[in-house]
Amino acid sequence: MTEITYETTDQDVASRSLAVTVPVDHLAAAERRAVQTYAKRARLPGFRKGRAPEPVVRRKFSAEIRQAVLEDALQSSWKQILADTELKPTGDPQVRDVSFEEGKPLTFSLLVEVVPSIEITTTDGFTFTRSAESVTDDAIEEQLTQLQDRKATWSPLDGVRPKDGHLVSVTVANLTDGEPVGEAAPHSLEIGKGQAIPDLEEKILTLLPGETIDAEVRLPEDHPDEARRGEARQVRVTLHEVKEKLLPELDEAFAADIGKFDSIAALRTAIREDLEAEATRSAEAGLREQLIQKLAEANAVPAPPTLVRRVMAAYAEGYQIQAEQAEMFAKSFGPVAEMQVKRELILDAVMTAQNLRATEEEIDARVSELAAARGLEAGKLYAELEQAKRLGELERQISEEKCFAWLLEQNTVTEVEG
Image (cartoon, rainbow, N blue to C red; front, side, top):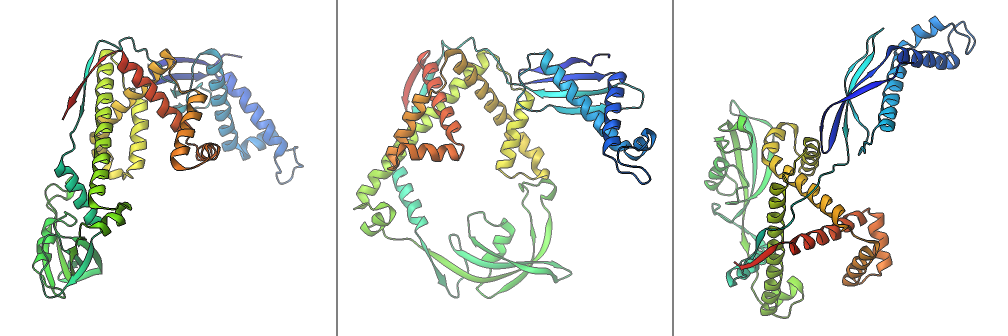
C-alpha cells in the first residue's frame, strides 16, 4: 500500500503546519472496512441482518461511509506523523483545507501546537533600577477618605435639584414621535462619576424630584463604539429621588468598624504599612518587567502567533468581550499578550536550563507557611488546593520566584526611592 506523505509548510517555536496527502489505495482500503462494518450492522428491509448486498449498503450509508473513511485517514495520518517525528504536541491538531474527491488522494493541512522551546544565551550584564514610591501623609489621608466613602450612608433630600456627589434615582424611556417605546428603564447613579452620558446627566441636573423632561441626548464623541459616536435619540427622563452622602466621623468607633483598631492613629499606622507593602510589590513588579524586556530584546525572543492568540482568547473570555468589540480589544491587548508570551517563554527556558523549578519539598514548605498564616492544618490546606486544582499555580509561583532571584543575581540592581 502506498504510504501517507506529509511535509512541513510553516513553523515557529510553538507550532508546525503540515501538508498531508493520503493515497487513493489507502482510502479504498478504509472504505472497504467501513462498508463491511455497516454491512454487518445494517438492518435493511427485505434482508436479514448482515446479509444486505454491498451496493445496497453503499447507497444506504454513503454519507456515513465517507465520514468513516475521512476519520480513518485523519487518525492514520496523525499516528504516522507522531511515530515518524519528534513532535511534542500540546493537544490535538487542527485540521484545515480538506480536499476529498472521488478517485483522488485526500489532502489536508494540520496545524499542530507544540511545546515551545527557545534558548536564552544572554542573562547577565544588565543594570536595573528598583524604585519604590514613598508613602506620604496625603496618600494615607486619601485611603482614609476612601474608607469613609465605603462606609457612607445616603439620606433623601426634598425639593432640591441634584448636584455633583448626589445619588439620584431616575427612569429613562426612549421616545418615537413623542411617545415612549417600551417600558422606562430605572437607573440609580451618582452625579459627577461618569455613570451616565454627559447629555443625560445635564438634563437630570435641571430637574426637581417628581419632574419629567422630554429631550434629545447625544452619545459622546469618545464613545467606545465608534459607529455610534454622536448618535442622537429622544428620551423622557423622570427624576424620582435625590440623596446626599453622609460620611461617618473619623473616630474610635469608625476605626473599630474598619478592622477592630482601637484608634484612628492605629488605623493610620495600618494603612501606612499596607501602602508600603504595596509600594514594595509594585517596585518588584516593575523590576521584573524591566528584566523580561531586556532579556527579550537581547535574545530576540519571538512571540509565536499561536501562543499570542491563545493568550488573547483567555483575556477576551476573562473580560467577556463581545464579537463586535474583538477588533478594538485586539489592538489594545495585542502588545500585552505578546509580552506575556515572551515572558513565559523566557522563564520556562531559564527554569529548564538552570533547574529552577519548584521541588516537592518547596511546595510543601510553602503550603505549611500559608496554612500557619490562616490557622489551618497544612495537610488540610494541601488537600483543598489539590481539589481546587491550584497546586499548579503555587508550583509556578515558587518557580518564578526562584527564576527571578537567579536572574537578578546575575545583574546589577540599583535601589531608588521615589
